[in-house]
Image (cartoon, rainbow, N blue to C red):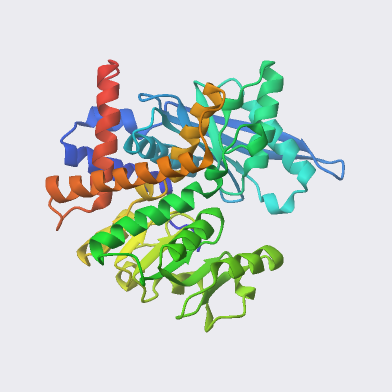
Amino acid sequence: MSVTHDPYEEAKKQLRQTIDLLGLGDEVYEALAYPERLIRVRLLVKMDDGTTKTFIGWRSEHNSALGPYKGGVRYHPQTNEHEVIALSMWMTWKNALAGLPYGGGKGGIRVDPKKLSPGELERLSRAYFAAIADVVGVDQDIPAPDVYTNPQTMAWYFDEYSRIKRGQYFGVVTGKPLELGGLQTRVISTGYGTAVAAREAAKKVFGGVEGRTVAVQGFGNAGYYAAKFLSEMGAIVVAVSDSKGGIYNSKGLNIEEVKKVKDETGSVINYSNIERKITNEELLELDVDILVPAAIENVITEENADRIKAKVIAEAANGPTTPEAEKVLTSKGIVVVPDILANAGGVIVSHIEWVNNRMGGWIREEEAKARLEEKMVNNFHAVWDYWQKKLDTSKYNMRAAAYAIAVERVYRAMKLRGWI
């Protein structure tokens, strides 16, 4: 599943298509095609063996017209500057589409976290947040977990920032542990939100999600919870995968048992109650009703799009479908619930956590989950209605509708503020 496309170039293509759809000029495209600020930092980390290792990190702050930058930080050996910029741009659209008072930001460190000890991870995390401490803040830029980062990472960030700034700034990051002002709902939010989006799409396409077959590529946090909640909603999850491969059972998988095996052995491929093992590429092309790509960018390309058989694709990952591939999917009548809509659950609950921190505690977990579901449902139907009522559905898809709503909101905010 190697990435063969430049995600930043893909993001700019999507933006250009939206600018043309809305009839906005080149000046608007230029104002939105580049981040407002890009920070590149060198991190010197003392390793357990006494040596010092150098790591490179980034923070891209794409747009702040609607509010402070908001977006996660990922630790991955393939992370690069263009990926981080693209992800920050997608966060701008995601936050705008969700109706949140945020702009878009994203961070990353080029590292394989699996090769670091807990102590080395902590020192790396503190070094990164210390390096960007002057540009983040409760009202400036609010990071959160992403690939291979988690509540513990956010706890280190929060503590390092509070130490540097000499205060208790709980709202500087979201996705924190419960003891430090986090919400349990944040843990399930991306996967649950994706499941809700897939359910709503299934209602439109099939009349309901009950009994519909599902394949989930990627069994990390988002993929696991998407599979778990879709199963609880009555769907039949027949295939899941992780970086080592996938498993298939036409009668359905017991998601909790698969999760236990993955936790104990390191991969879903060690689960035994299956009909066969499959590759990640094979999973994408299974004859299922709903496909949930929850792994990495650009896995559905012009090379495999014509072999996709699912009627609904709910994007839990960021940017899993290339623009060229989506043209093929649209021509086949496949409904793609785009990433900026389908996986917005994480940032929606991050907003709830952020407000909760600033208010000193105001919401119960069950209320947070209910608010998440309500917002996901409302956002889905707003995009669906825009698509059906304002666009030529034979030519445009749900992503075009979602981007049109989001870009127009950001454009209006920039215009009102006198930026353009």
